[in-house]
Image (cartoon, rainbow, N blue to C red; front, side, top):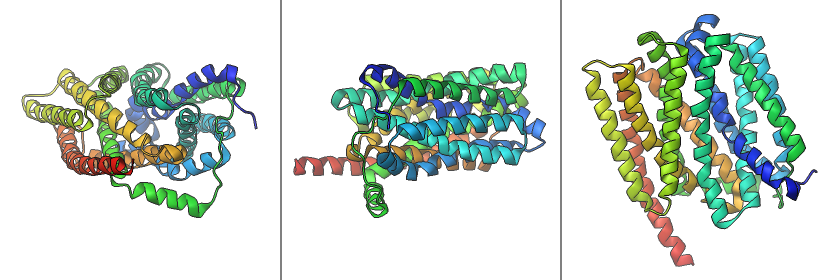
Length: 404
């Protein structure tokens, strides 16, 4: 087993941070290509959207099992194998343009991405403690938001210049570069291995999922991210087919959406010491107000500028909420970092994939009005859940004070 060398710790940490957005890159880079893929593969819009949802669901469900595997067998070798397999499947998608092959490869990619990202999140808990660990955790969602900024922007240009297959050639090449850098500079970060006992692992999962504030927090971040995915799934068709713009314009719109998420995360990090309930409640109020305005103004006619204008505000507030609740969930069980990391990411992806695909197709989102209606329905659900979450969170804080 190759142990992480002290003189490589700095660059290895940079690599770990750089790999956290890989799941977003794998999701977002081909968003501007969805209409072109549907045409080229002779399938419906929902069929090609399903490739993204299957990937997200695969990432999510895999993380239920991956955390315990990483806590028992380490992070490094598993990460290397996953990067290699992700690269191979990316090239297969580009070379074999068949929707069912794409579905299969995307499911495999979801598993490999889960192994990589959960391992890298747990890496920070392995090596850092206290305020430094909190600082890194608060950076996760900000760094993760880099993918929605850069990936569709790049994907729009790749689509416009080389076609949709170029997105997957790019992903295959990028993961190969990361694999080489990991081989040179990284190593095993896990110091204390947990025995792989299914009964003990099942009890740990059960205990975490029975903790109401933790579980409700996962639902909140899942639906919050689901609102972003609804836009990601529908915007290429609204912008390219309804409004008549190019894939590059879709890329720019997704760039602004991703930048908004990052901005929300940065604002949340700067307000880390403010009371959680107060700041999140205000953010939900802002989102609801903007969504209602988006619905109301659509009756006067929608345009690219009104669509993007409202989405920027909605996603800034969403990124703010996501950063705060995500950090809360990740730090809830520090003694089982791998499992907690896996559950947090896993449940989030599963919930967001179900809600986003379900609501995008339930409301058949093809206009600003229908996007606003879908978002409003999701906001009503998540606001009710947040009220319940806050009650259980307050109760857990009282219990923690009594114990201490």
